[in-house]
View 1: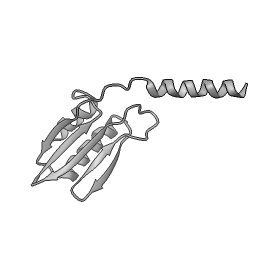
View 2: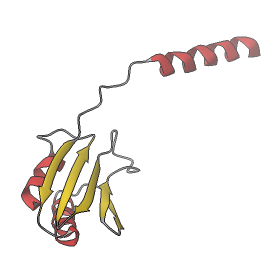
View 3: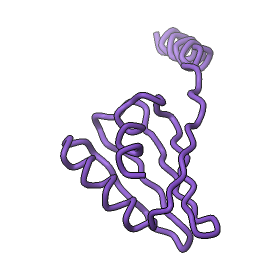
View 4: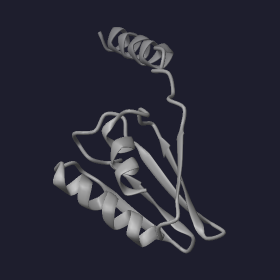
Length: 109
């Protein structure tokens, strides 16, 4: 009985590991002349207005927004903000170019 359970468990693990992953979405790029703080404040306000989970980690030359870790999120987005010679380059990963995160970025740039 225990051996059968082990074989069934092993087969289940292999089947899950072999399942095709959803295709990765291409990152979407934006840029803005706004400061990281101005952009981050705007994006956070829109996220709050829509009552969606988010977090932000500031760094010396930009920061990162995401909703990773939220229980209601199946595929978290990453929004990377990088300071580049007086402007901010913004890279949105794991989100559609017409999705709510991209629309929020567009409103804030």
